[in-house]
Length: 192
Image (tube, helix red, strand yellow):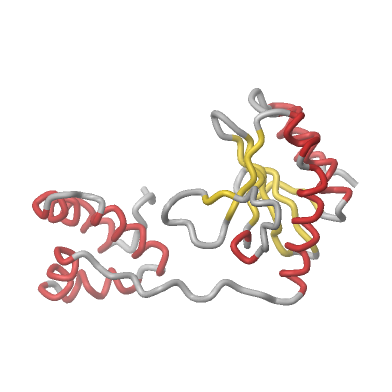
């Protein structure tokens, strides 16, 4: 049974409605359930998220939540970015792409469901190596250190990535000072 919320989402799409409808039929035929999560069509198996559709400017992505645990026998899975660990995606630019990759999608969905049913998980993320300027601030300011350590691992990682992205030490220090109030308030980098 199709979810009317997903119908509504696709009907409002101006970028990839035909491709989403074509993919949706494949995903539903694999026994997945569709719903809206994080504002996007998400497909699950017995409550476990398997894939989500992501509309990008130049392509429609079918993102596998645990894509790194799939064998990728056809070599079509792509990383989302340099800091992505587990999620991998297949990109589509036309309904012809969907048709051409239909058997691959079906095969990968079956493997993703098997991964969920086996209870497989990604190994823990490696310990984040904090940039020197952040480490210095943590050592000098116990309140800042307590607030930073109280953040979720993902939030700590995101801050550290933002700080470490600056090429110059002075810029890293400026970024840390600018973000300090949010960190002290227990907020993530993207929180308001």
